[in-house]
Amino acid sequence: MLTSGQLLADRYRLSKRIAVGGMGEVWEADDTRLDRKVAVKVLKAELSGDAEFLNRFRIEARTTASLNHPGIAAVHDYGETASIPDGPEDTAYLVMELVEGEPLAAIISRGRLNADRTLDLLEQAGNALQAAHERGLVHRDVKPGNILVTPTGRVKITDFGIAKAADAAPVTHSGMVMGTAHYIAPEQALGHAAEPASDVYALAVCGYECLTGHRPFLSENAVTVAMMHIRDIAPPLPPDVPPGPRALIETTLVKDPRQRYRNGGEFASAVGAVRAGQPLPAPSGLAMAVGTPMAGPMTPPTPHAQHPHLGSPVTHPGSRPAMQPVPPGMNTPHTGAFRPLPPGPRPPGRNRAVLWVMVAVLLVALLVLGVVILRWALKGDEVPGGANQQGTGTTSARPLDDSTDRLPGKPKVTITKSDYVDHPVDEVAKKLSGHGLEPEVHSEDGGAPLDPGQCLVSDLAPTGEVAIGSRVTVTCVPT
Image (cartoon, rainbow, N blue to C red; front, side, top):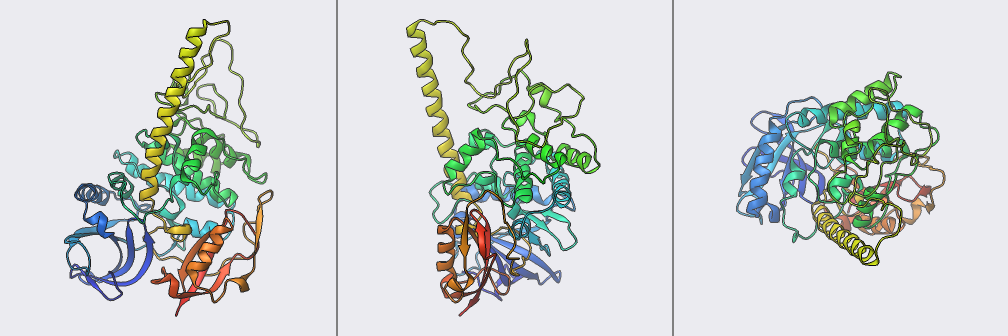
C-alpha cells in the first residue's frame, strides 16, 4: 500500500495521490536526487506480477521516453522495486513530467467550449500525436482524461504506450472498469489493429465533446457504446457551432479509417486551415478509399459526400450529414462485407445460402466485438462512476458553475446540493450515477480520497437542472 511520505526506490518521495485508475495510482512526488517535482505512476500488484504485461510495459516505457515534443508529457524514468509493503517482488513504476494543469475532462465538465478554443486544443493535440505517429507509435487511448491543459492553455498528452501494454493484460483481472469505449475507433471495436487514424478518430470525439458538453454516444453498457461507434452517425452538433468546425468533426468521425485524416499531423493541418478561415481540405486517403472495400465486417457507410473531386476542399452545410446518391458508373465505397444484391430473381437455394453466409459473418463479427470490448473494459483507466480523469498532472477541484451544460433537447435531472452534502462520497457517487450523471470525485486537497467511505461531501456542482450524461464534480473532506 502506498502512503504519503513513502520513499519509492530510494529516490522518489510520495507527497499526494492525484489519480487512481484501473492500472494503478498516480502520485505527485519529489525526486530527491534532482530536486524536482515529478508524477509517479505505480502499477497495480496484479499487473506488476504478470510477466507478459510487465515485459510489454518495459518496452513501451523505453519507446515513449524517446519521444521529445512539448505537447507530450515526458517520461523521466522507469523501474521496478520491492520496497512497497504488501506489493509483489517487483512493483513497476513510471516517472513522468508533472504537468501543472488539469485534464480536458475537468474543463469540459464546467461547460461547453467555444469553437475557437476547441480548435486551438485540437490543433495542439494533433501536432503532439504526430510526433508519435511519424515514429510508428499509436497512442490507442486518446481521451479528455489523457489531455492535460496548462494554465497558459498549452496541451500535454499523457499515457503514451500504456494503452498498448494494457492490451497484453489477461482478461481475468478484477477491479478494472470501463472508461475508454466512449472514444474507441470503429476499427478497434471490431478487433482491427489500431493505427494513427484511430487516434485521429478519438481526438475528433474529444472535439465533439468540447463543442457539445457530452459524448456522442451514451450508454451504461460498453458493448452498446462500441456498437454505436461502429454503426451510428453521431447526433448533430449544436446549431451555434460554425460551419468550419462542424465540417471538421463530421469529416473526421467517418467509420472507414481510410477516409479520415491519416495521422495527427494531417488532422492538425486541417484544423489550422479552418482556424485561418480556409476551406476544409479533404483527407489524403479519401480518394483511394473510393471503390476499394475495406476488409472485415465494417458495415456503416460514411455520412458525407462519397466522391469529392480530388484536390477540392470538402465543404459541408451546417446540418446533420446525410447519405448522398452515387453518380452513375462509380462504385459505392462500401466498408463492409455486405453489399446490395443485384436486382432480379435468384434460385431459392442460392438465396438461402447467401442468407446463411450473412448470418455467419454477423455472428463472427459480434463474437470478435464482444472479446475486444471485454478487453477494453478490463483495462479502462478510469475509476467507477467516471471519478478519475486520468492524467499525470495536478487537477483543480474548484466548484463548477451551476449554469453549465444546459443542453437543449437532453433529459435533465434536478440535483439539490443539500441532499448530498455531509454524506459519504462513495454513496453520493452511486446516487449520481443512478441518475445518469458522471461523478468526478476529489478531496479538498485536489487528490483522490484515500477512503471514499470516510470522506464527507462538502460541495458539488453543477446543481439544479442538470442534463443526463453530464459530469458532476464532487468535493469531499476526510473525516
